[in-house]
Image (cartoon, rainbow, N blue to C red):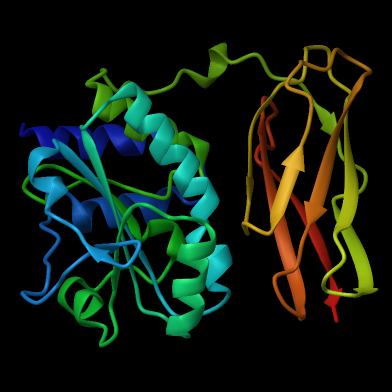
Amino acid sequence: MNRILYISLSVILFISCGNKDREILVKLMQEWKGREILYPNDMHFFMQGRDTLNADSICMYKIITYIDSIGCMSCKLGLSQWQDFAVNVDSIFPNTVHFQFVFQPYKLNEIRLLLKRERFNHSVYIDKNNKFNKLNKFPSNMNFQTFLLDRNNRVIAIGNPIYNPKVKELYLKIIKGEKIERRDESKVIKTEVDASNISVSLGRFDWQEEQKATFILKNVGDKPLVIQDVATSCGCTTVAYSKEPALPGKEIALEVVYKAEHPEHFDKTITVYCNTENSPLVLKISGDAK
């Protein structure tokens, strides 16, 4: 069995057991495993306004993500989260992974301002005429528009490591060369959680004013409650919480801060991964920034 096929099958076993997206993931992995990502001949990446050399030619792996023009570009790109992830990867595996970002912008100036504001120092290509997408026909679901590639641009794994900690863990295991095995869920210590309020309306407010909301998770089981990771649907939403386990009967408070980038009606999600049967928990905030 070739390496890419082996890894593809391992990906499904590793990440999708008990996951409602299992069927989608299986279908996508069957379609994309070993497939070569194609680049237009005139495609040139830039970094902070400068052309970049083909750094990927000296790296063993490449992580490439495609972002279309639909919706909030700042939310979809998640620049700060990607910066943190890339720094983490490079600290563990120096000069091993090259990050590339391709997107078809709704507003070109907005993209450039975002990149400049975040001091984004990774390779970016603006797909003005949708050439890159036409060549590759990427999935429409943004959760599956990110790929881990080998040196020959062939797909090893699919999924967004920024919004799914299991995908992040998987990517790191593959890059490190660790064996990928199916999880034995029966050995995972699980508890029960009560989240009586999973949706908060922030109402109407001045878009320049920072908004806050608090979600309480109460451990109503008989084992410690551990929050493994938290992912937000937008870079304008941040979450702070205690990393310490909550003993039975105790609570963990998630302090959510929302800072609008412009006037808008918004519906944002906070996905909480924890050691419960119904993980992940999806919390929501909404409102009108005027």
